[in-house]
Image (cartoon, rainbow, N blue to C red; front, side, top):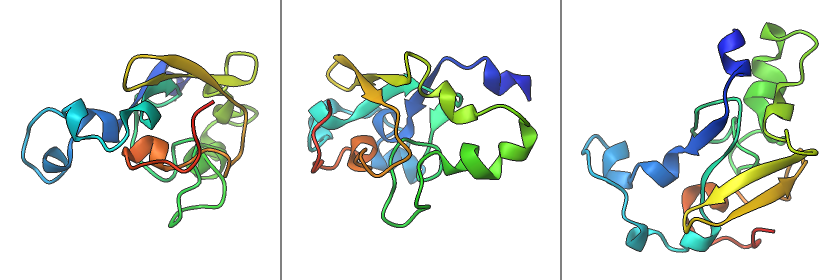
Length: 131
């Protein structure tokens, strides 16, 4: 279980795998295929090496739990008694350092949801702009 406590950054699965790859056809993601690369998270501070959806990102997804990082705040919480694993995402003065697809970096303030647009992870055009 200590392995998760030593993680540094998590890659966003939607930024490193294109739709065809997720369907079993291997090919690299091209930035030209992303609707709005300026609002696509590539990687960020994380306890998990690959963020893969509704329960392990900073977003509250329409079809998912009502809080972000649900996997770590609730589902896996019993594995780490006394440790708030969500702080692994907010390790820089309660901010999450985030690398965006074009290569710029910014910090996302601590949140439990819904201020982070889930489309920052999918590559769809986001309603809320990154800070």
